[in-house]
Image 1 (cartoon, helix red, strand yellow):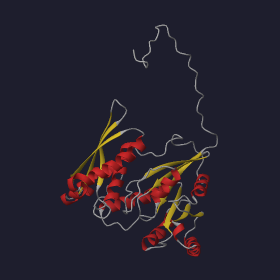
Image 2 (cartoon, helix red, strand yellow; image 1 turned 30 degrees about the horizontal axis):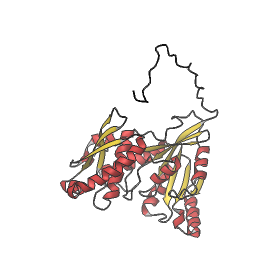
Image 3 (cartoon, rainbow, N blue to C red; image 1 turned 45 degrees about the vertical axis):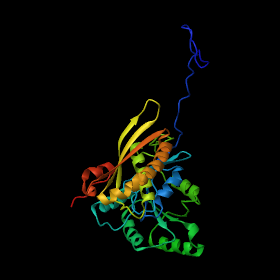
Image 4 (cartoon, rainbow, N blue to C red; image 1 turned 180 degrees about the vertical axis):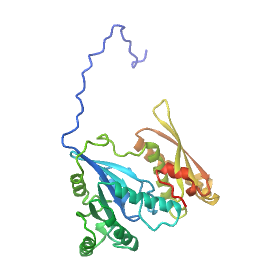
Length: 324
C-alpha cells in the first residue's frame, strides 16, 4: 500500500470543533464613493490601481479604453473608499462616445466626492478647459490631482496648481505620480477623511465590484491594445462567453474578440495565428493571477459590423444606450 494511503478506524472521532471568533466591524466606520474624472490618458486607471494596490482597471496607451464605470475598493483604517474610474471625458462624435461621456458625468454627480485628474505635463488643454467649465455644476466636494509630477519642473507645477485653484473651488490639491506612487498615501488618507459615516458597503478584502468574467474580458482587451496599438481601432471589444470550472480546480474560459471589419480580424489573428496566440498567452497569465486559479483560455475573433450601434453591447458594458 502506498505510504500516502491511510486506514481510518470506524470509531475514529474528529477533535471537537473550536468556534472561530466572530468577525465584527470596527466602530465609527465610514464609506463612500469618489469619482475620478479627467480627459483620456490623464492616468485615471493607473491612479485607481495604485490606490487599490492591485489591478482593477485596464491601462493602455490607447485613449478611451475605460468604457464603463469601474469601481475599486480601498481600505484605510476604518474608512472604505469606493473609487469610480470613469471613462475619459472628451468631445463625443459617435454613439459609443456619447454613452461613455454621459457615464463619466453621471458617476461624478452620484459620488460623495469628485477628483479631477490632470496630466501636469499637458496642463489645461481644450478638453480640460471644457471639463472645468462644467465642473461647477457638479455639487459635490472637489479635489484636484495633478499627475505625472515627476515629468514637469516644480515652478510650472506650482503655477498650474495656483491657476486652477483660482478658477475652481477645490477643497484639496494633490501632486502625485500614479505610476511610481509618489503622494498616493497622503491622497488616500485625505479621501478617507472625506467619507461619510456608514457601515462598509463591501467585504473588507474585496478590491472591486466587477464580476471576474468582466475583468477577464477587460484584461484581454488590454492585451489586444498593447499588441495592436497602432493597427486596431479602439472600438473593438471583448466578451467572455463561457466560464467553466473543471474538476481539477482550473477554469476553461472562452472569449470572443469583436471587430467591425474583416481586415481587422486578419490583423488580430496575425500571420499563422501568431498575434492572437501572443495576446492569449499574455491575457491568460494575468487572468489566472486575478482569478487565483489555473486558466485555459480560448480566444475567437468575429466580425460584427456596427456593433457599437447595438443596445445589447451597451448593456454588456454597463452603459446607457444613447438614442438618436
